[in-house]
Length: 395
Ligand SMILES: *Cc1c(COP(=O)(O)O)cnc(C)c1O
Image 1 (tube, protein in one colour):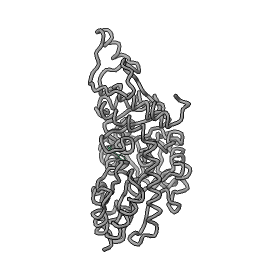
Image 2: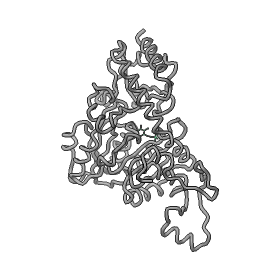
Image 3: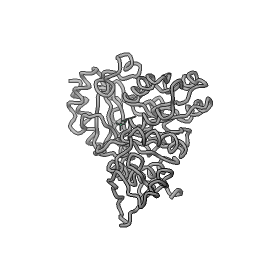
């Protein structure tokens, strides 16, 4: 299986068949597992093999299939599936640090990630330094001998800055720090994060892995040593494991993720190009456009693919942004991303509402900013819809 290409692994990787030899992966909707004898139960609690399960919080056959398949896609030794993307982020970070440690993080973060770093870790005596993730000198200057973890979103939400994984990893490793990358916006389809030096890669599976807006989930990927010795004990005792049903949804999502995400990226680029020079806009932010500040990095790090999300900065601030959202006929107003349905959101009043006005200004989250997650609709329909809604925004 390891010599096969990604598309093949996404369809067949990790499959475990029951005694019925089913084609489609079975959902093992069970909390527990029966032992043949008291001695077997005792032995399993001492050490359990890959097909020996104890309790669904520790592991489950359907969840294990998902973990194996996503690990193959990412090129990671192992994976642990979690109840949500935030369970993955908080588990990855919290399992690695203790009071007195130092963490360096990019400043541009998903709101809940920022809460973990700024509020929770600080409360437990972990010091966090925030830097501009695109500034390699800032990373270098923030490193200390006691820096244990470096954390960043490889493509930030919602302003879509792209961070140089290989360069930041080199800086972090020079002081012995581990590198944890939240890779949602880059998507597992285009990720080479482990090869580029990330020690741990985290996804919200809720986004492109499900891809049809049904279930919450997350996954942490890394070395076998880290996943089984550091993360698994933390996750299985704190309760953030993925449910078998959700793992089944994610497993089936992986079968189509390559096709879906590539179609979404092609469509996102077509829309971003069509909106160039639109009079209602101050800016079109899309990493796949040549004028994006990190487009050169997108070419090397993401195979030239700018992702499935673009952001628009509308002339006329919040009023224009709201008129735009309310005028859309095809895309829906919601806050998920990576869905089959195109979704638009106004970060300043929703996902990033909790931030102070200064924080939003530093991050470039202006009152006129709209984030648009491209779905699987026809590109011409989306361009026509966005164009009419932009015209309505200025009326
Ligand atoms: C959505 C998201 C998360 C959180 O994922 P959930 O599945 O909603 O818990 C974390 N990081 C990024 C970058 C995200 O987009």
